[in-house]
Image: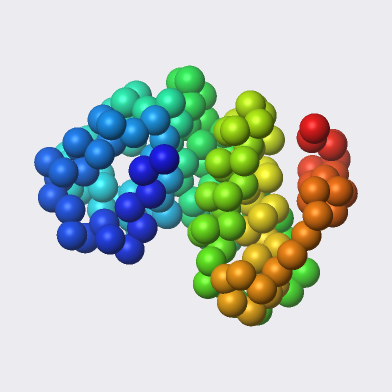
Amino acid sequence: MFDPGQQLPMFSGEELLSFIDQATYLAANDYEFEMIVDRTGLTLEQIASRLDALVITRGEKGSEIYAGGERYDIPVVPAASIVDPTGCGDAYRAGLLYGIAQGYDWKTTGRLASLLGSIKIGHQGGQNHKFTPSEIADKFEAAFGYRFK
């Protein structure tokens, strides 16, 4: 997964194209993605066509996953509390990677990612939260009305 994050400004359009062409997945927030579009000169559709999946996070507006010619709109899971956003993107990526590794469909994978970001924002620091698989499954079912396996 290519996730340029805060290092994005150091790459030229040519370098970004090279990374995209070597990647299976690209994940970026909306600001980062606009920079990728500006630097590469490619459209969203052109970038998505080079990947198995393109993931764009949009903060409180949720996220979008473009895969297999489809667009999946992923809703935000409302956080119980907002304490610290540090690490929310990493938690979201963890959900993506877990869903991909488990072979989940894109809707479930994105929703799991959204849930993990929501859990993280309610805790101080990037590593000060814990949960069990059954807790995640319960929270997922409460948020989305179905249980993943």
